[in-house]
Length: 412
Image (cartoon, rainbow, N blue to C red):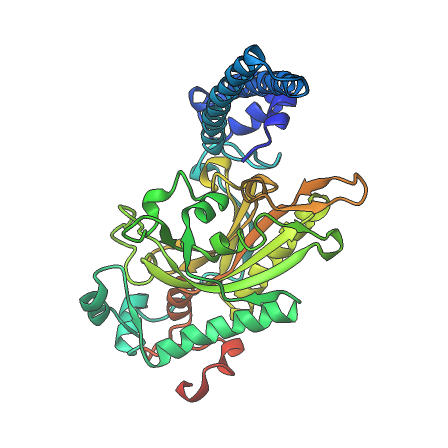
């Protein structure tokens, strides 16, 4: 969430930034500041009453003093209850305010996304190309029908060479991140409601998550959710920053109402695999770290030889917790569109405030909030359709990217 003091000191600047991604009628900064004023007044009243109670406690109690102390204690109790409700209201209001955005992020939604890089060329075929569903099925790589019998629509089974290709991609990602000095994490797949709040998925995206029957735990939608809580309530050592991690985890999403006719097969599903980069950084170099994450994601796609583009998202198309996001999008020939395989974002201190993750600043001597950054490195469910379609051959076979061959084993 945003720093209430920063809102108070830079209200117009923050308002200008937030209006890039939300309507003015939904922007309630004045109301938030009024609630904070009320909170401060209650705190001041409580402190005065406690000082009065302390004064009485140092005198010899008689019946009148005992009565006064009892009244003061009752009043403190009432004010404490009022303070708790006020702080809960303030937290709720602040939680609904998105992050500010970087200066170079354009206002508006998807229509204002900006392509900033292209790699390779769209494939040209001298035969009638097939789509990835037909290719995966004919080559025995993916079984959609049996997966649907087991779990319903929106799921699939990797089979034979398809399973080997999926695991080869994951192995390729793991080796790449290890070589860059990132620490490997396999986190839990279930998170508490508080953890989902820290990552910024609550309250806005509650309905997109799969919850246990008692509503206390949810399946992760991205490893970013787990890693954002890895150092929750900790004070990190400044000399250890930046702390670089990568995590492997299945991701689960309801994707309710988001399917379109052309989004068949693995383009959009309820479960997929992803390797996620996650970094805890000092504020001084978080934008350099952001550039590093973008380059890492791009190098992984370039290593596969796939045609892709990188797009800087407009404010309204980026996640509300992120100050800036760049998507790496692969070309899917049968759909004639680019689809995201990596989303790289800088949340600044928005998530760390929710998770109370700080570091000791050696210059100021104060505990300050870290910056938190994440980036897919990479998600597989759209890479395989891109590999199948971009590298299909006239005889119906697929050319496996050279970088993956060593991981394919006897299936290659």
